[in-house]
Length: 284
View 1 (cartoon, helix red, strand yellow):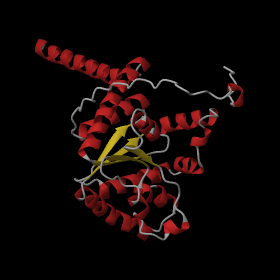
View 2: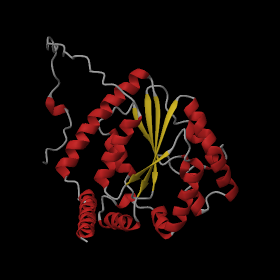
View 3: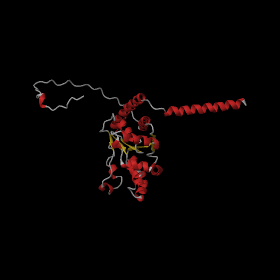
View 4: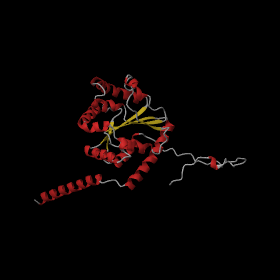
């Protein structure tokens, strides 16, 4: 009897500990801690950039997911300290009539990286599996053909030497609602809202079904999908960057020491009158 009571007590304790652990994970990440960790990860990204440049690597990172899931925020933090000539962002608008008549992947191929480049796709060829399919912008046959062709297209990219990494940002409907409301109230964020965002809310379940179909066909061994829990923006950014760094083996190449040359002396140079120049008003 005493033994049973002891076991019961132990189980109860374990449940309490488990609940506490889950609660701890959900606690908001403090801004100071977030910025410290982000700084550390961005230093590692600079090291990765150097490695990609010197080793002539070709890297493609795809960011997909629900509207307002935070894809743009992660991309911004990745590129913040990097050289745009090495790490560039591709965010294509709706296709033109000419592009609609092309092979579906054609306009994306033009933006693939050369050696020493990393390209971040803020949405990608997966538009056909999501918004185009749900909103009826493509036919059922075009959708089926995409699901057949996409895995082969991506295997071909990998065989050609491109490292292909795919992220799906997952967000709850409650959190998406909060973020949409925030964009409605904040004039500096209104531009982020579009008709498609409202349609995505109205077709939440249809988008879920489309994503499930997409994963079933395109979650391939050569280029698997990685899901980012994006309800907590700060954690999502840190987790995604940390994971990206873990997928590309790189080494720290210390920079060469830099010595500034002496400044040229102003011998025989006469500056034009300062009044001849148009200065920006000193308001602040």
